[in-house]
Image (cartoon, rainbow, N blue to C red; front, side, top):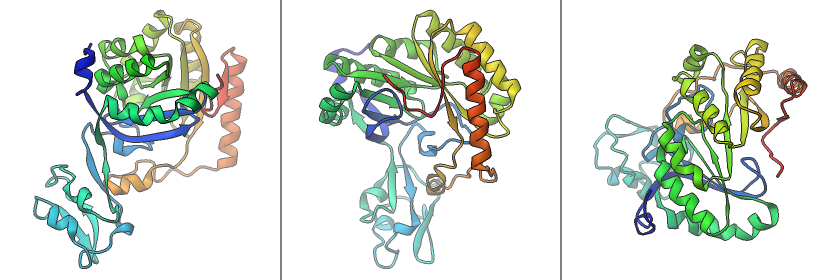
Length: 323
């Protein structure tokens, strides 16, 4: 663990900070989203989180035009990295781009967005402290998410320790697809844990996330043996994990392997989110062809919630967690 003096210079790569969020832990919260993820879920709504380093994202509609501005092109140290269509920046050649973000710094219209910012613990705490009064009145606090925040476990541990030093509640939202040492580093200063179970079959899990689920399930089991209470989630994706074979297998695992430590199971209905961010990074959105009848699918989600509750697992539809 870093000393207090070391923590002054310890930095994390943060791609978003949301204040006054209600969805990832109880009460009003400040949520920090950290870069880097070992998974690549086909339905991920935060593609900007996948890489562990900062990247520029392109929003063509905001571009003033190459002719009227061109400041990004002047700032870029790599000839040909910025490509224009009909006079507007349309795509960045990722093979040529070094992610220096000089183009984003030069852009006056935010047509180039920097996905990721290096921040110190103290810089993050300066944002967090603005809302201490709201945390105290609502039972809220600070949540870290991602990406996978525990890929930056030293930074998260230092941030959470700083929060606890100021009596601020902490919540870690993680896939737990990491080494146990990274989890153990953060646990002493973690009040609430949120994770999810995407699929019980390791091969199906790998098909849709690029990794098998063994490490995730083992870490969830170990957390419960450490007597850590969990908020679990299932992102319900039609045709992927909403079949009753998988749902019943998930219930069996929760009941037999997680030692009664699951506080709440939350069902998250599939939504088409993040498509503009995929375009900003010139990445394909793998769920592009999936079409959902919202009314019938929501009925199915509600039926699945009733099934879990019928098995004795406290299950809610949605993410708002009461204290």
